[in-house]
Length: 427
Figure 1: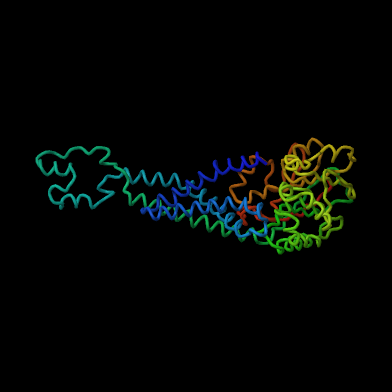
Figure 2: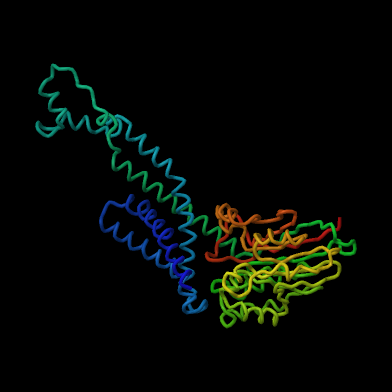
């Protein structure tokens, strides 16, 4: 716990603080000319930063349901903040070019009223250079210094550029976020993918597995979120249902009512569940009992034969990190029938490296959310071998769903929620 606390405060110091300082500079300091305006803007930025931090802390302290307003404010700011940051960073180069281009223009072009003012100004009020020229009209004009030709940019011009960038970034960030909210809270996209398996018997050609992951029941979802997912899965008429972790963000006591509709899932060969990292933050043992009560069989480092294939499931890697039982591939897969294909449920795609060592034919995963908000997918790719869709890791096929829910901001951009019908094909 001490290590986690230190890591959290390190994240605050390294990430949250500098980002908000940058936003204050670009959105408040550069665009505001009065001390009062900067003070108000600074207080607003600080308040939003506090709300963001509170969104992570308060639900764990007082419960997910009791504090839903705080996560809503904090997480929505997180989404807007992210796209403000991206947009402003993209605008940095054009902003610098615009300011420098204006600064290089001759003073007469940048401030056309200056020459007129100098000519009509009373004696003693002009610049030193103009007074010298008036005092000695017979002399040729002195060469202008570089500072006089390309002096500092007009403050009003800088203010115009800064305000234009801030307005553009604000409209862009709020527009993208609004689109992302609509996508995240809408029906999941129903995907279909055919995956050939060399060992699959002809009798199982066309076997259908409904894969769903990252449902993330929590303070911002509601029971309709579960009902919508159940309707979508049952409408696919699957042979088997695979729930690949991160079902919840809260305790059974808090979210039991939201999970209740999952008892209505229907398939020929049943529904199966493996833990994700968020189960270990939400009381994994209680949820494993509750999931079983709802009719989904937990696979905790175990396997079973279903018709002509072996279905296996391993715990998420975070279980081991938290001392609650991580994945055990040897226990799960050693001694199986080598003539049957193995379909493995594992929450994180990165677990495929170990799965490949044990001859797994197909791994079904989630965890990545497809990046959830582009360009987060580029960051996720630094850790996970497959972000979305079908890939391969050391000879093992890996299919990764975007997940049916969201974590943090109720926002999805470029990675809509999905449920995938995986159709196995004999070769």
